[in-house]
Amino acid sequence: MQERGGAVEWGPWLRLVHYWWPILLGWSVAIVSSAASGSPLSSAGLGVLLWGICGAYSLDRLLDPSYHRDPRWLRLTLTAGFLISSAACLPLIFRLPIGTAALVPALALAGLFYRRLKQYPATKTVLVPLVWVWAAVALPLADGSWFGWRAVLQPVSLPLAALIGAGCLLCDIKDADQDRRTGVKSLPVRVGVTRTIAIATALSILGAALAWLQHRTGLVIAALVLAGLGQWTSLLAAGPVGALLVDVVLTLPGLLIATHLV
Image 1 (cartoon, one colour):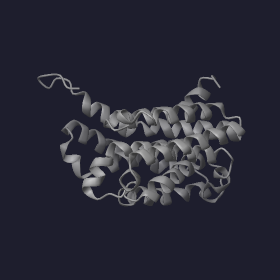
Image 2: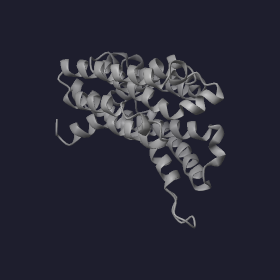
Image 3: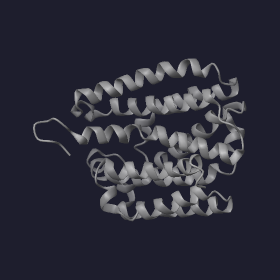
Image 4: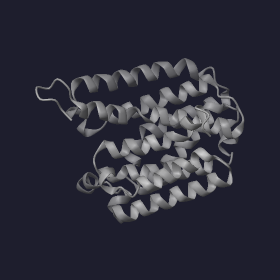
């Protein structure tokens, strides 16, 4: 949405919200994992996670070939987000147990190679959910185990991975035409939008079932809403709006826990 005369341009603002909403999503996963484990959150670990997400998603956009089409203020905002996030993470890393801190370089490498790896269906379906859950569970809990393996092995990681995997697939719908033109082998390109939505819906239902067995009401609600949203193909294909709604749905469990509604 743009006001004539250029006074207000909602498109770039909406994209910025879309780029940075994963910060709230990371917070939500941390809240869910803390509630499931009964362990308090580490302020340093949570800080590294949230600043790291801001930096990684800002850098991903800055490296995008269409980056030059963004308004100057948006490019400067993303650049500032990356630089500030990088600077904020450094002192926090030294406050983490050494076993947890060992995870940070591995996550940094995953972020650097993300643009290349996300061209392959297996990356979006398996690697991205795995990295997301590992980072968002292990860093905030900071239990001191090497690479946070003990924290990640808690049962709630399974429904979290299923939901984030479903969300990644649904977010790919908006890029299907562009991916097809540029040769990116995303799942919607390989198997079609209809089958991709069916796989995402199956993952959502699997996540709901696993969460139900663990009595994680917030995750059940999010999974069912996500499965419903997956049937709204026209919205998912309509630019950042659909993808932003997917991220908002995935943020629901943490919000429900934080507000004591579940």
